[in-house]
Length: 299
Image (cartoon, rainbow, N blue to C red):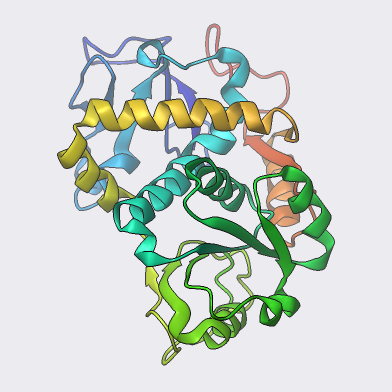
């Protein structure tokens, strides 16, 4: 996810120099077949894109984005896509009346996606947001102010098992998921799987008590809500919420930029190993420091 610049185009309505946001490969260049062109953006309609969710082939024009701010490009690259997922999860819970739950359990509470979800849950005010994290990240999560309570993975049995709950699992750990399901059991009304920050523990989760864990696929909910509300109304709601989240992140998020292949690989390994500060966000570019991808380009 990030920003790119059109360097050359054979399409009369896609102009060199345009700034666009979308999903890119980890590369310096991307060649697409532009189609579905509108004032808001265009899509890659190459044959190999068939069968994939449309959102992954869509490129949005900066010129048509009412909240675009060149100074926030790095922040957008880091937060925009994950906030979309978190906002849609919270909206899904809202549409389903939170499955009659009182608390929202959020694992991997120090991750940016979990923080975005907690921010949305807290903003709605219908559920208490309970963050679950490792001991070293408890203080950080508490200082954020978007969680009503924060506990460690070892202390989940101290939570009130009688409180009807929904679980949004960003950790992906079979043990963590199992501990929460066994503790809350019949009080667990909905169990949603999204991330895998604990990628070392992706074991079997068959036969757990409580609601059956199911994956949340954001593009499906986008289609559903777009049909109900209209695309414009949905995007307006999402954009307004994202603006508020960006402001919230100004108070704690420090962006670290890494340029060049070696720096990118090192940053990836540090994140994978869990050695980065949760208050930092890693933005990478394969362009070496000081390089330019084209006239006026900002890689």
